Length: 185
Image (cartoon, rainbow, N blue to C red):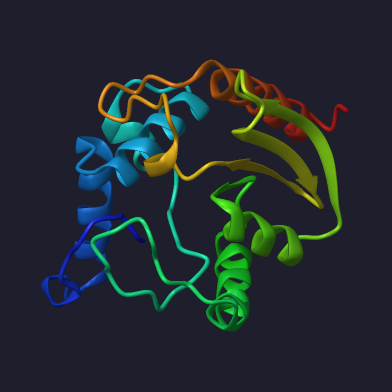
């Protein structure tokens, strides 16, 4: 249950400690990464109470072995991405979510490879057409791909403000989840 920023795993001797610290980071928006994740998740589940929406998602990394670098460059290599793909697949299978949200380029590609076949549902872009959110359908779940929240211009991660293209994408995801659950197109 990754949460961005630096932390010492030795302070978390049990899973309940990890879970508590993850929820706290989501609820208090302790850094741009978790603040962005929390802002997007708050709107996805249409919930204003942090304690409630923080219990409705799990967060993992496509690459499991990246060290904390104090920068936006994780140092993930193609070999690391390939080697971690089976672990990510196992996590998705164990959690069996209705929705998988990716953040950034290589997680999008990795998840799309794991969950193929993929069908495009909708695509949203900012005014310049450079920053995108895409909704995809794969088997019995939806995938929404977004830019990494710590890199997303216009994301008010402390205030939960979202750029207009992301608001539109989130509304479409919410509608699609209702239709997905009822079997409607």
